[in-house]
Length: 167
Image (cartoon, rainbow, N blue to C red; front, side, top):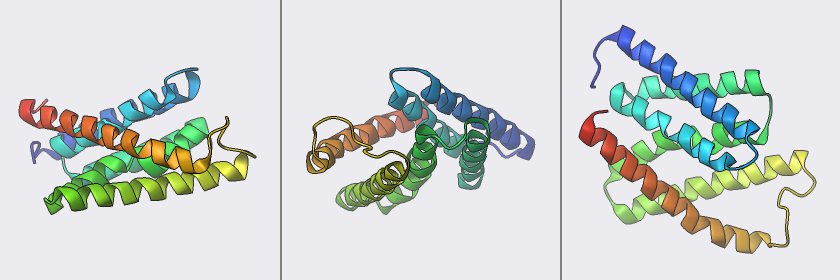
């Protein structure tokens, strides 16, 4: 653990939680690039993992989720953070300890597809047709797999840079 002082750990947790909530808030108010701000919120959890530990990062995720729900309400972006973007950094950390690239990719894709399915069903409860346009669900599923793998690759590069420079 990079920090061994509990007060520093709590302070970093508070700052990282605030940053996450800001990024989630920005994803709800900007007309474009909503996913970009959710991606930025995903970058916060690995910082917590590197600076403190898994337990503190879990607290950051929970606090960010609760504060986002309280401040922003039940919105699609908040649900997306709670179900996928928030916990992904922690889940990625555990999956990558397996140290077998093929199994890691399969487990990440399983998690992603489960989260996407749950989000699709939750959106379907509130929106008559959660997918606008003329793309079929089958094409959408095939299309988002490589996008997720690219997202994971960029997140991996980011984490390696953080570890290299110890922020």
